Length: 499
Picture 1 (cartoon, one colour):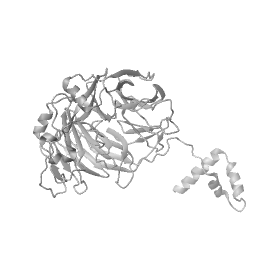
Picture 2 (spheres, helix red, strand yellow):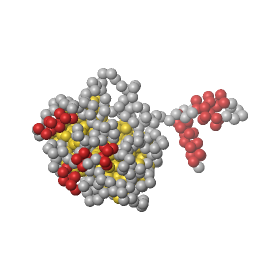
Picture 3 (cartoon, rainbow, N blue to C red):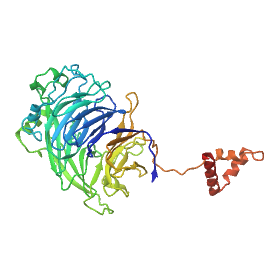
Picture 4 (cartoon, one colour):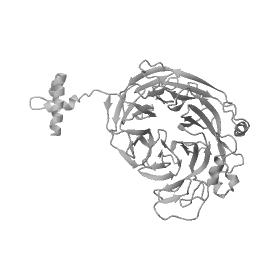
């Protein structure tokens, strides 16, 4: 397997332990450029943009998951933070609010958190949503602090951050969440939040807006009663047979979405869920009238890929779905492939329940992502091991590897924006055990196919041009050289060039 070296990188200081799902790349301020978001066990969430840390949300509890997406279904991205003790925070940039500026104080009061604790799983009383209060006190220092006690927002570069993230919703959910996805999992056109828990349970939620709520841009002028813009309502609950590795969204050839839940031993559970109701009021009525989370239809089946190499049937598994294919790889009959990786080093590409190929590496894989590294329109498989080895594989089994040469505690790949005036570039993000975050950007891989080096015979023949040999004779002489003599000649020329 060909090894590559990466040079372009950024390094950030970020102390604390970072969970596998507590790092992501996404556009949280809706400017078309991705930021890097990382949370740790100390309750800090840092937002990096370009080469700087712009904002830190602190004084939360152990951050288990972070995700970026249109969770409120308002055509606007939000930052979703899930803590291990069962709190869900939704943060947004209030770009349309002229009354909230960089000097304003944004807090979530103890009263609001108490009201939010009355609700678990979206059942019962609606939680108080994002009590935002303003303070006319300004901070002239380069580092300002927003809020007190429960959690604060620390700004590391006030001059550059014109619109800070504001907490717009806080809600109690079940504890011990380990993985999260945001997407339309039931085909109704609405974004849902799906959580995987350490107690082998998968839960889905949808943010339902309060019909009496005002728009977010009017929060600063609204009364506390009008700030209840909605809540996360629990839709479904599924119990798995074994521990959950990761969850992903995948679509069938007909476009029907399903949730793939990785299970030990290279297996996974497929969940197809379709909602009978699309109206928010109907969902609210169902959630208020009954605590049954399985009232929406769906089907569950287990997939056993039958890997003969699998030595340990209890080995943890990762899965990633909806791998995009280029036009030359697409088929009108088959659906998109998905990838499966196990801790013992097995990597597989599966399409229509058929294993297209499988390879084995001698390192323990803990992270599986996807990214179009080569830029050909087809997403590549990117896996990372605990000791810092990264494997990049295309859908034709061609591969390269990169070694960070230090242990890694969390990994993510995606697109990152170095400058708002430039297009985003590919990025590999490593969270190390030395309290540093290393981001390699603009990955210089244009083709994963290993090609044999063939010298340019015309240029090589120029070395043989003299008074007795013209260009044609010199070219003919080079062509008649055997491969060993030609290779030795090239090695000699390279040696002379270096010396």
